[in-house]
Every structure is written in C-alpha cells, then in structure tokens.
Image (tube, rainbow, N blue to C red):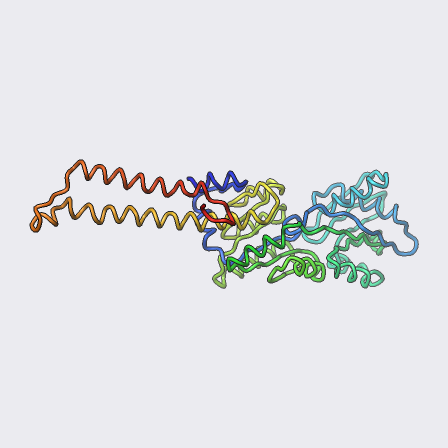
Length: 348
C-alpha cells in the first residue's frame, strides 16, 4: 500500500500489487519507437515529387486521405497541409492497413499512402525514390510514399525527434542488468539510427502489430520476463501479452486499459522508477517478514515454557502483549520508510 501510494506520487499508476511484484523479475524491456523512445510528434521535413506532380497537390491528397487516420504520421501530414493553407477534401472508401499505411479515393482517384512494403504489395514501383528514402532513413527519418491511380507520385519525409532523456533512461535500465529491445514497423535503417542514438541493445524493424506480440512471446519462450512500453492502439495486444505492460499516459485509451502500469508522464525514466520501487518493496517485505519471525521465534518458545525447567521463567502476558504490539509497530514503521524513497537515490 505504501509503495503504490508512493508510485502514484511519482506519476506511476499501478493497477494491482501483482504488477508491482512482477516488475521486480523483469529481465527484458521492450520499447515501441514512435511516441515512446521518440517524441511522438513527427513533422514533415521534405516533400519529393516525381515529374508531372507538384508538392502542394501531393500534400493535398495525402492530407485528405490521412484525415481519417489517428496515426502520429497522419497528424504530421495534416499539420504540414495546414501550415500551407491546404484544406483536406472529402475522401471515400477510406481504409487503414495495419502496419502499412492507408488508402482511399479523392476526387475519383485512388490514393495509396504507406511504406515500401505496402507499395510493393500493391505493385507500385518505388525505384525512382528508393535511394533518396535510404538516405533519409539513415538519418533516422521515415518515408511515406504516395501513389495515385497505381503509380508513384512522390514521397513525404517525416522526422520524429528522440526524447531528450531517452538515452539516460535506457542507461538506467541497462545499469540494472536489463536488456532493451526496440520493436517498430519502421524501416531497419531508420530504426537503427534511433537505436544507436540512445544505446538500445537490439532492434527488430518492419513489424506488423501482430509481429510485435509474436516477438514478445518468443522472448518469453526463451525464459525472459518481458516488460513492454508503448502508447498506441497497435501496442495494446503487446501490452496485454507482456508480463508487465507499461502504457504512457499520453497514449491512447485502449493502450492504457491494456497495461498493468500507467505512466502519467512521457519519460522512460518512469519505467526505471517503477522497477526500482518494485525491488525496494519486495526487499522491504522480506525485512518485515524477518522481523516478525524473530519476535515470534523468540517469544513463542518462552511463552510455551521452554525455559521454565531451567530458570523457572515464564513469559508475563503483559510482556507478551507488548512484544506483539512492538512487532506490528516495527513492521508498519519499516514499511513507511518507503515513503522517503527517491527513485534513483534510494530510501534515504
């Protein structure tokens, strides 16, 4: 109770005591990329078009289709259109393709927005812009291809800056002996650039939402105790699958509902704080059990008359009652030491 209250004061909402206890046994921390390691506020930094297409027209159809999406990329595209005074138009037959992109009809033309995998799946050649995309990905940026009527029209380059404290938070997790893994649907080059910048141990890129859950299951099958940190709708199945699910409070409601622990802020330091609180709590419980055991192991034999044949000593009921009360006071007082705990600095 003291620990859950202390965690709440740190902006860490723990659903139950079991989640707090399991956090102590975590061996691997799995991280989503967008909105977890990065800010989750991507912005369009460049628009590249093929001959016969203009930037404004490409952005207009992209914004029109993305108006029906809740993805962070959609927000970036809509913001870029708004900055240029472009209003999205009506879209018909909209469809979100999980882990790939979106499609719809704008002005009678079929518009397809998404990653390389989606374009190749639909038979859209991206060779003209493939090398440019690789260059952007190497710098940690993402590419969104735009196809009109089944032909590539251009590409939007989207950058999502890494959170300023992601690297220090990941170092804290690693200092506790935890392995860090980043799972993302982004390209390998972009994912590697982000991971290298913050020191993540392992990266798995190009995953669909189901693929993330399968990877977590594979880690668990190897004996790892997995904590998953995410914030999006696509992260909900993985959060539910993990041994301990951490949802960022800035994320979607379904992610928060699927998680065991909700972090009210957006910093990954809160994950390290929660794990540290878990370790301190279990350590405190063992101290309390030891203290109660000592009182009983000494008091009960004396009360039973073990010393009477040798010394004639019996335990006065008043002393027994006082010892029982002192046992409770010791346990409660030790538990309340957790109130002075400062994650990263011990219990004071």
